[in-house]
Amino acid sequence: MRDILIYAEQKDGKMTPVTYEILGKARRLADEKEKMVIAILLGHKISHLARELIRYGADRVYTVDDFHLRDFDDVVYSNVIINLIKQEEPEIVLAGATPTGRSIMPYIAASLETGLTADCIDLTIDKKTGLLLQNRAAFGENVMVTITCPQKRPQMATIRPYILSRPKPDPKREGEIINIALDEGIKSCIQVVKFVKEIEDNNDLMKADIIVSGGRGLKDAKNFKLIRDLAKLLDAKVGATRPVVEAGWVPASCQIGQSGKIVSPKLYIACGISGAIQHTVGIKAKIVVAINNDPNAPIFDIADYGIVGNLFEVIPTMIKEIERRRSIET
Ligand SMILES: Cc1cc2nc3c(=O)[nH]c(=O)nc-3n(C[C@H](O)[C@H](O)[C@H](O)COP(=O)(O)OP(=O)(O)OC[C@H]3O[C@@H](n4cnc5c(N)ncnc54)[C@H](O)[C@@H]3O)c2cc1C
Image (cartoon, rainbow, N blue to C red; front, top):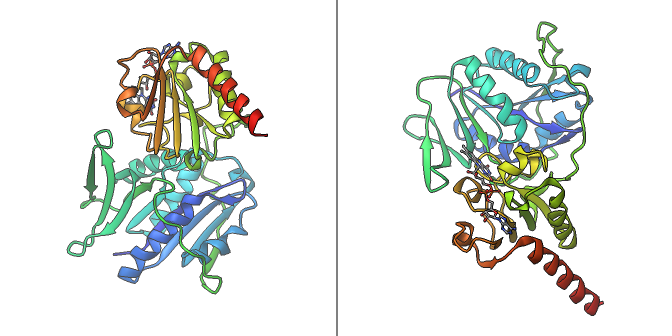
């Protein structure tokens, strides 16, 4: 087995949590075979992060610190990584199943004509064949499957964030940092005009203790204020179904489900959500409360508490009642 290469994803000069989680796993797999963990770090003004990657388990870090990498660009980022893969010929390539990882890894895999397993929750090495065993949920999260890539190289996988444990950093760890220049031949067809900050600060949706989620039952974008008001009162994050995101009522970062985020809060309040399997596979909550005016809505099958009623009456009543109780307590 050759080395393991990971894409070290940073955002605004800070490592994403999943990068540490992948580093920990890559380190364990590499140790089994006495191989190296190579990290690739891309961006602008990010060189200071290279030492951190070594402390968390990388043996060698390639850094491309360039103004042209300031804004994420699928084509440029992917091609820098492809060039490095061709140079290093790693056995395994890993990245987080974040919007960035999900965007570049299929491009890289297709360009290299190899396979990619998305959204893995664990990785091990088959002792007999030395192949990477890539574990992920399938068929609406109802079965666990193990996928291998026996014929093509590298073996590639994205890892679901917040599943693997984060390793402890070792301040004494030593490694090699190699700064490389951005290949001028890599050109993009994308021009970034500007970045617009999302209204919802949903970076922590996957770590949230409470999520208030809204579906098409809200009827209109302006009615989503009800969801935001209840969320604010409960110090919760805002979630949504896919049609609501597609309608532009809330940003894509709010989407929960098969093609959105998998969340595991203590409390999930589903408002005007029918409970389609593609949505409910994303809910790993301790307690689910559902508000829906259709008593036969499938969301009630997974709900611990169900309120059959009109959300335009139920949510304001809940808000009033919470405020009333809080005013008594204080
Ligand atoms: C490949 C694929 C991937 C997908 N991925 C996702 C995904 O990641 N996430 C996702 O969410 N969906 C996903 N979907 C879409 C999914 O199949 C459903 O269409 C979607 O989840 C339904 O959204 P909804 O519950 O908001 O809308 P609807 O199904 O239209 O449900 C609206 C609900 O609101 C209730 N309602 C209406 N008025 C009121 C009221 N006044 N008070 C209370 N309740 C009311 C209705 O009874 C109904 O149950 C995917 C689909 C496909 C094919």
